[in-house]
Length: 337
Ligand code: UDP
Image (tube, rainbow, N blue to C red):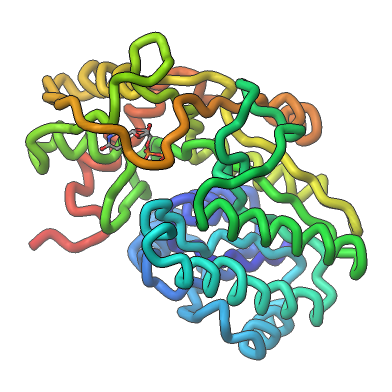
């Protein structure tokens, strides 16, 4: 299949690009490179002998998108390009509404105009806000508590309306905490600024930070720290490939992608100590605003619908793949100075 991947130079997008190429698909990446990395696509092409084209462009450029979709005979679009910093979305919601909704709608209209009927959207557990039932099933009410979650929910609603009125087939895949990297260390996670727990902990192991601050140890959880469901990025990629096969015209798949297992912040630090052999000093800090105590997926529906199972169910194994990347690329995709 010919597939356009927006945000394909980003963390989750690049792992999907690689998995799709390995599965024999033809991929065109569309990325404005604000957060994405040219180096991710270069690594994939050089390593695998692929010729995945990277087009540098913005989602606002609808007419250009229409031409790209037509010229490349695109049959499906996977839309990863989005801003995804919760804290920033609270400080600057306009940026999030502009990009994650307004610009994304011009992509959706380009898709509509070119009669493309398969659309896969990166949604998020943030659309659930503070869920009342753990593990979280798709039946949980979606009540986001920050602008980031709202923008993702609004786009999910646009997809549902386009499916109803224009016959679009789509999958909204609600990710829990993406983690890990390609096990061969070729591509991985590189955010500026880095805010995520696992890469920050590994930066301590690399000597780039002195310690990790634990955001709150007074949560109503067994060890007092927040629990999250860390799903390996390659398991996410595999679910995207399966979703492509299951999308049907005028229908939407809304699926949670997680492992169904939760790990606390303290457990992550301990697992990283084991994997890296580094003591990783930890400090007690205050709670971070907007962090629910526990987010764990019930992903039975995704498993059944897609005939998909997460392969990484041991957090140490997931962290080991992240470690392989960080050790090989201590400066991420930047060239060594
Ligand atoms: N966290 C932490 N210290 C950090 C970064 C994160 O204790 O320096 C905690 C955070 O409060 C959350 C968990 O680690 O409970 C995962 O956070 P992350 O930012 O990786 O993902 P999120 O759950 O926000 O999507």
